[in-house]
Image 1: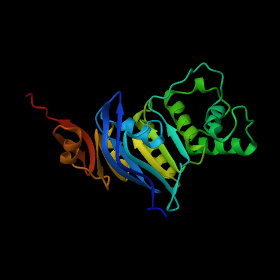
Image 2 (image 1 turned 90 degrees about the horizontal axis):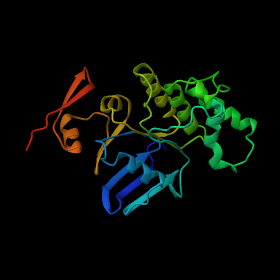
Image 3 (image 1 turned 60 degrees about the vertical axis):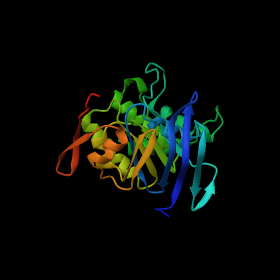
Image 4 (image 1 turned 30 degrees about the vertical axis):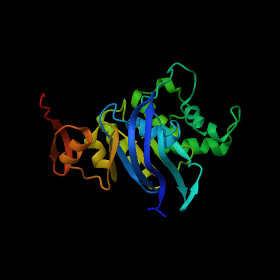
Length: 255
């Protein structure tokens, strides 16, 4: 049931301290979706994700989850928050970091099984980090650590993988490979990706949600400067190599 909805938002609003950040958002995520969420800083991208995750209760509207066409209480979700940081000197191995993604399924002091360790190793292999499992996390580069955290989000076999700025700390070469790997992950679960990098998102996802307090949904990865201008609240000019947006230039007139 690849095209069946697994997450639906119906006229959802969210606020902090009485200030509305997300207003009347309606959105559907399907089982095979690769949804890119873009928008200006402070426009509500992370708020939208937190509403989906249940970290923020909607001020209005409803969020529903579905499995096999039937409503359910929640989905198995892997989550990489924005700017994930930890003490690089903390004595923990790469595999243990990935295994920590299974804590929601176990008691805090649960001893991980051989099957759990195999899951962790498969997630590391998918992120092309085979051979790193026994190394201290502090020995890895920033980009390698970020891929470890993606593996941590994958180890629970999620039905939906949610990534907030996953390319942070990763150089351009490895960013391209990360998006290729996420394309492979998308064969098995829905992916929701938040990024400020419009060109990269448009090139790699299936659908786009432009978020600037309101949600502007585009049921295709092809967006125009006019669409972005409406969502971002300022004029856009798309500069592309072939059909791939490379850079966005805006012209702000002073009032």
